[in-house]
Structure formats: structure tokens, C-alpha cells
Length: 421
Image 1 (tube, rainbow, N blue to C red):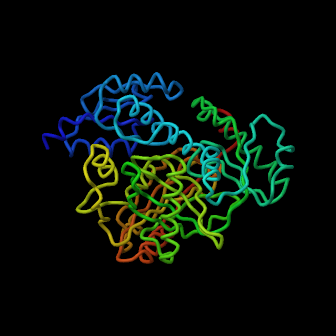
Image 2: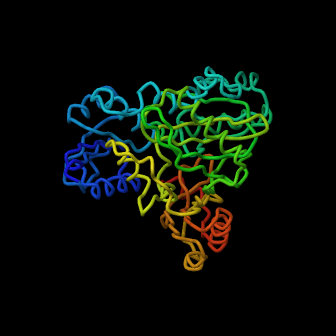
Image 3: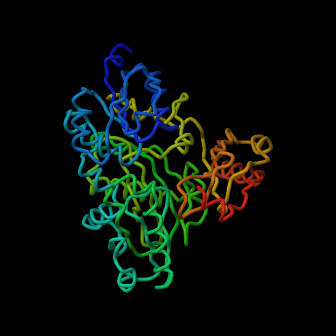
């Protein structure tokens, strides 16, 4: 414990949300000397008794120098943009993390596609288009069906399938509108001024959670995504582990991830990958230099009762976590989709959902009076369901049964009310 107390850990985050708090709680349990670096320090109530380092994601080099100057022995990041600053600071401080160039490529859909194709991994045809370009000329180059997506947004936001030129034009206009919203403009990220077009990849989709230890891949979990993700939008709902895919498919997923992280240059830290499998093999959609996002991380706990965030911190400070094993035989999460736009008024059926065998938690994150909208514009969910059981089929059944018991009241948002927001 005394050795841990001397470890100076820097946590880079863009918000003070759920996952940041879980990381902070884990650091307290481990008795680490934790410092937070965030671009939203003005809203902190300093819960760790230490002043946060103010950073700016639009000024990565200057922010990295500021973080490195504070002195650090280990570093962790929450999210894609924080991962790049963490990589730059780690390089300056000489502590293990993913290289900046690898993080930059992995956090860009275009950079990822380019590096994976150069390494000979299966890749669709792809090209990127400035948002200001005439979409008709971009549509003329497309092979249908295709998928249009922003370069930097996450959680399938703005990802739209087009099966013909008219759908392409409609999707391009819709993504352009999303990228012009205030929350995106505020990021001042050049990547948000591009739209990527790539050939649609059919097949079953999976997510893979792993750690890299100086280039060695440690598999943590393979998630099935049992709901079809065929478009036109690609809203994720169920993540269930362990995977029920054939052993040969699971082996191919892990082998492809190893090739992908090598192609991207990722070396040390968490990796969250999204992949598809069909008769042609495995297609890596992304291999992000971060853990699974936000509340979904609750679906993974390790023996005896360790959250994923604590495992990542132990790895960051140099502890051997290769023996880590999942606590539950099977577990999963449902991200409760937003079925229609409107104003969230409430939900019934919570207690009945909580009584479903296998359900561990029902968490509604939508707030009463909140204006909500579904994908592709959405960047959130109504809430989350968590379950564990003896096998993944029971987990899936519990999540679906609990979801069916919930009834959400979403009122129509009148145009006049929207005009005064």
C-alpha cells in the first residue's frame, strides 16, 4: 500500500461524469495520489481535495506540457479526446501509454481505415468528403449500399446507411446538420468538418474489451450484440458476454484485434473494439484507445468485486493484472433506446423490471422535462439495464423481459415550445 501511495496518477477527462467518478473512487481504494486534468475544471467541487489541472483539447501540445510538468508516474484517460492528451503527456513524462500517433489514428475513422487497409486487414472501400462539398458529387462516387459517418463522433451518432443516391443526399444533409449543432461546434475539432463514406459491411457485430501491456494483448471480454444492426441507423442496445459465437469465430475476432492494434501502433492501456464477422472473415470497425464508455462499463466486474476502472488503474501503475477474471459467469447491459423525439415525462414499471430474475440494476438517466431524440441525432439513452446469470442466454432474456415491463411517457414537443428554447 505504501508503494501505491507514492504513485502519482493523472486522470484525463472531458467531464466529471459517472466514469470519472468511478475512476476516482477506485484511486481512493488503491490509495493513489490522484490528480484530475479536465477542460471543465470550473464546475468541479474538488471532491479529491486536490486542484484539477485545467486543459484545453483544442490546445493539445500546450495542455500536455502542463500535465507533464506536474510530474506523474502513471496516466489514464476517459474518452477519445482525453486519450490523445494523455498520450502526449505520457510521451513527455516517459510513462507507459499508447503513442500519440497511434491514438490520433485510432480516434479517427479515416485514420483507422487507412492504417488497417495498409496493413492488409479486410477493409471496405472508403473516402472522406468535406461537409461543405456538393453532396451530389460525393454520391456519384459511392458504391451502394454504403454508410455515411462523421469522423469523430461516437456511439453511432450520425451513422446512416444509404442504399441509393437519394438516400445518400438525405443522409449527407442530416449529418451536416448534426455537425453544425452547438455541442459539436464547441469542440473546435477539424475532424468534425468531414463525412466519411464507406461500403456497407454485413454480418454479426461484436465488441471486444482488452488491455495492452507493452504490446501484449490481454482479452477481457467478447460481447455479442444480438440485435441486428443493418441500418438505416445503428443504435446499439444489447451487450452480452461471454459470446455465444463459435470458438473459431471468437479466435478470429481476437486474432484480428491483435493485427489491428499492431497496424494502428497501440501499445499500452485499454482498448475497446467494434467488429463484424461474415463469410469473408472479420472486419474491424474500430479499435479505440479507451475502455468501453460510461455506464456500460458496469457490465464488467472482476473477482472478487472489482470494476473495470480499478483494473485499468492497477494496470496503469504497473501491477500485473493478467490473472483477472470476470466475476459473473455471464453478464450484460441494455442501453435503453429513445423510441421517438419529444419531452421525457416519466416511466412506469420500474419495480416490476427490478424483480425480473437476473436483473441487477435498472437505471433511468433521462430527466423529467428533458428534450430527447433518437438516433442518428441522439447522443444519449433513456437509461440502462444490467443483468447477470449462469449463461448469456439467460442474461439476454432477463434484459428483454425487464425492458418490456417499462413504459416511457414521451410527450410531443410542440413547434412553438421548441422555438423558445
